[in-house]
Image (tube, rainbow, N blue to C red; front, side, top):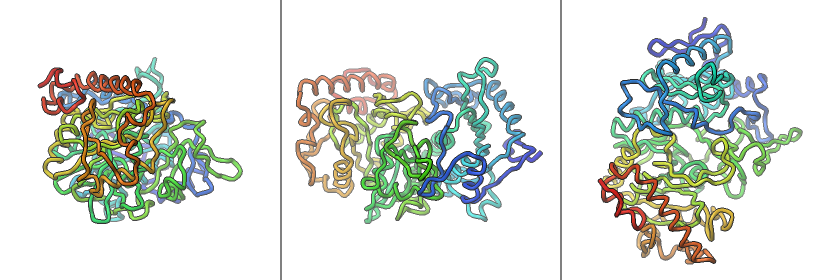
Length: 533
């Protein structure tokens, strides 16, 4: 029996082959030989026919142990699972893997050596080994000799559970044990579960050290200025941070310490539905040999990719190393940011395309995390669904959202950073009536904000949402800056805006007790009359 992991009293073993940190070409070769995937004409490894084509949030659990019980934000997101049930499934998984070839990756989450987390991933699929090697920080040869993993992810994707006999909700189980330091994934092929589980772990560990952990992308301008982009999948976070005029730090997960910004990952995990070479040239070129494509439609004869075809799922994905983006920053570190951008996909079409936020507004909108989940991001989502996702990443927050908001407020004040709310959703009407914001217009607005061109422009408070809307921006028609001006039916706009404001108010009631009066009063008109701290 070959033992491939030992954390406390947990051991994973197999009578078959164990492959440690194989090279990229070898992992691709084995994926093809094992019929896990094929090569597209651009050299990318294509994985199709996946069981679960997006995250499975209702099947994700945190093991409820006494040591961490009072720290966790329990509820619909952080669902508790008993120690006994977790141990039962873990034991079954270990037995299952004992007859499988295993692919092991040892590396790090976190580009800053001071705060990085040594991670081990054990998977039964070669492509999951490649996924892990691409998404996490790859160790040097010397580091690989001495690395001691502190967290292990066990991925048994072909192990399908039976709710009746195993006591689970479905055939899928994703369990995070913060005490035993184990993540268990069964029944789902979706690569995102691997990276997001470790992101959740980092979101637990880092705030305990007063480090702001963030679901955001980050880049650096020519003058060395750092910018952060917050937003859920589908808001344009990856696309907008991959700016040809700025250097990429990372596209999804970062920490903000007293030294500056550091990426958690060594790669990018981008949505590629409707990807075009003209609008997103950097991502287009990054998808090549060494990258992975999930659920895209490929011509079986030519190997050409049809990025416009969402017949398998709208949640088509590309995984590629961050250094596939030209002028990326390696190691993925940056100075304290000067600009923070909240990206929201507004399906109501009532928020302005850009607005500046005060510190208190920033905390309110950060806690609220308003956006619309776009098609395919999660199982069952086929069109935009209005949602409030705290900190623009609620599914990955083990702690109460106000804890992260407090860290945001402290960082904004300490480092004198500006915060902007940017609507990448609809204009001229809501979903089904208006049009999705043009990415070129959004880039123009962001460039003006980040380069300081909007600093001295007069800004007017939105009459309902209070956010500060600039009167002008070079290269952007003035009528586009005020959302109401883009609607033909002004009464319909007023009704939609009031409906969204009411949604903000209703959602924030669950946070009001801990948020504080100043943060509450920074919300939409009428909210300050609600319960305050």
